[in-house]
Length: 553
Ligand code: ADP
Ligand code: MG
Image 1: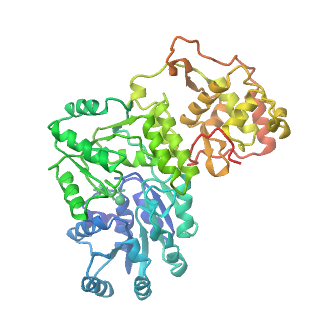
Image 2 (image 1 turned 90 degrees about the vertical axis):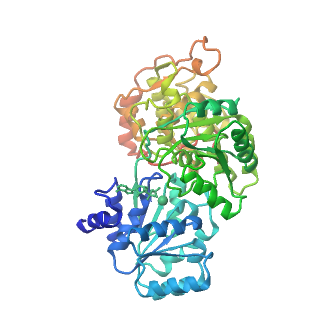
C-alpha cells in the first residue's frame, strides 16, 4: 500500500488514511465488489479515487448529483487528477471532446450521471474502453427503500452482466439492512465485501423538543449562537419560505432552498451558504446531499423527519470538521399525520409506516438518544453518551434485569419468530386461540410476566429495543430477534437498567410496576436448551429495528 499512501499525499495532501479507507482500497484493488457504508464526511470519495489512479484504464463514477459533478471534477483537476464528467447538461461538442480525452487516456476518473450511464451510447463507449472500476456514489438512490430513489439507478444491474470482471464499489452514508440488501441485489454484486464504519458522531449534541412555540425557541437558540452557520429542515416548500421570511424580519440572515427553485437560483443559494454570505438556510430534504461544508454548527428539524435514516443523514451535515455542533428536533404529532398522508399516497406503505413509527419511538424514548441511533444501525454504545437531552436530564431508572431476562428468554423460546405482541401475550399467559393452537402455552416463559400489565410490557419492549437488546426483522413478519447484547443478559449476567414507567407518565408519583423477582430459572436453563437446539442467536447486525406489535403474517 506504499503506492496508495504516496498518491494520497501527492494528489490530496494527506498523510494518512482515515479508518477503513485503506481496507476499502485494498479490497477494490483485489478485484472485489465492495460496499462501503460510512457516515457523511467520512471520506468515501478517496476510497474509489485512489484505486482508480492506481490501476490501468479509466474508472467510471456514477453520481446522482449533476449539480455538483462539475465542482467535484474541478476540485480533482485542481489537485492534478485527470478527471472529467459527462452529463445531459453539456453540448454534444463538449461531450465529444471529453470522450476523445477518455480514448486518449487523458482521463482516469470519468463522472457520469445515472441517466448517461444507462444510455445506449454510453454502453457502446464502455465497450471500447478499458474500464478498471465502476464506483456508484450515493448508492442508497438505487434502493426503493432509500430516501432518494432514482429510477435510472435500477437499470444498473447491466454493469455486472456485461462487465462481470470489472469490480463495482457502491458507497453510501445511509443504509439500514433493507437498503443494503437492496443495493447488493439491484447491482447484482458478486459476493461483495462489506465495510461498515462506525456511525457514531460524538461531537453532535442531540436534542428532541416538543413542537410548540417553535419560532420563539429558534430565535432563542440562534441568540446563543451568533454568526454560526446552520440548516433548518422543513417538511414543505411553503414552510421553508415562510420561516426564512420570518427569520429575516427578525434580523436573521437566512435564505431558503427547495426543489421548486430554478437550477440557477438553487446553485446561487447553495453557494451563498457555503461561502457564509447567508449562513442559515431553511430547506427541504432536497438540500445538502453532497455538500461539503465543514463548519455547519447546527441542524434544526423544524418538522419530524420521515425516518431515522433521513434524520441521521441530515444531522450528519453538522460538525463535519469534528468540532462541537448541535442538533435539535421539534417533535409534534401533527407532523406524523402529514407523513402518514404522504405515505398513504406512496407505493411502499408498510415499510414507510414502520420507519415512521420507529422515529416516533426514538422521539418518545427516555433513553440515551445516541444509544438508540447507533443501535438502529446495528452498533452498540456501552455507556450513555452524556451529550443528548436525555443524558443531561436522565429519568429515574431501576434494575430491570429480571424483566429483560423474561422478555428475552420468551423471544428465544419462541425461536425469534414472532412479533412483540405475541411475545407479550405469551409472557402474560394469554389464552388467546392462536397462542394455544401454536402450543406457545407449553413454553417455559408462558405466564412468567403475568404481573406486569400489557401496556407496561409494551413500554419495556420498546426500551429493550431502544437499548439494543432486541431488534426486529421487518422482512420476517416483524419477528423479534436477539442481539449480541441480549446473549450477555441471558447467559453472562449482564445487568439491564430500565426507565421507571412512572417517570414516563405525567403522574410521576405513581408507583412503578416492577415484576416480582422470579426464580433464576432463565439462565442455566436456557443455556442448556441453546446447546440442545443449537439455535443460532442472530447478530444484531443491522436488522433494522422497527418495533411493530402485530405479526405481519
Ligand atoms: P463523504 O463522501 O464520505 O461524505 P468526502 O469524500 O467528501 O466524504 O470527504 C469529506 C472530507 O474529508 C473531504 O474534505 C476530504 O478531503 C476529507 N478527507 C478524506 N479522506 C481524508 C484523509 N485520509 N485525511 C484527511 N482528510 C480526508
Ligand atoms: Mg460523498
